[in-house]
Length: 288
Image 1 (cartoon, rainbow, N blue to C red):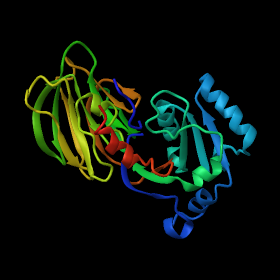
Image 2 (image 1 turned 135 degrees about the vertical axis):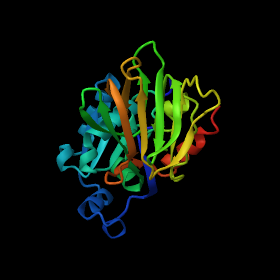
Image 3 (image 1 turned 30 degrees about the vertical axis):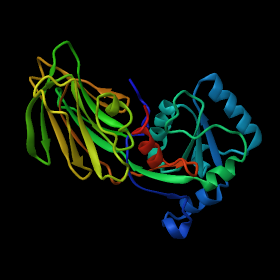
Image 4 (image 1 turned 90 degrees about the horizontal axis):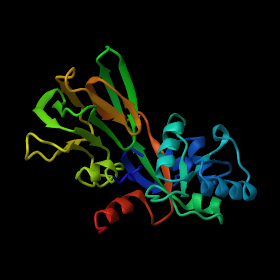
């Protein structure tokens, strides 16, 4: 199934050229990005990505990720998603270059003028989803997702789910293989494969998309406000076990999941001028 999107799980507040300190109010972090004095390079464990890393480290001075202003990620969309999760708490901008396959979230690879390309890049500010999963054991697991949170049946038995939006039951019982909640940035990934809509990044909504729904037959999903709290309860959980997946991290035997946008966390991704994430999402709607 298609897995680009961010492939990164998040709702975008805006896209702008890299701000200076006075524009962004981000202090040294904003100024450091604009000046691009220090970069860190991380790469996937593939021959192409590792070779590109050797070339770039031979051409440009690098720092450790903790000391860098910008993190340069070499790989595909999956590695970009890993990099975002790895450095999410640090809030540093990430500039990806494609050394994988699809590269929906990546910039074209080139070893030339790297610092200037970073200086001229546009920045997408994304907020992840926060998933709180309640397990059969009574354990509570909290995870973040840039693309989507999905709930999937664990066995041959179809899942039975109840959906609440802001504590109001909107779907009393759904029999299905699962359901997912997607961010706009992730809407071109699993959500699209499940026949969900591609969302403009500034639409202010999340996609609630069923996966192989059996009953109710005509329900094809919903768009909910980005400020909504989505609660998905597993019915007959002993007979019909369900797992919850935040991007690529899975927890099993869940009985209920709460999902909402985490406005306290902002991820910044850099795209070359004219190739913004908004443009990519729009273009994807017209691809054949």
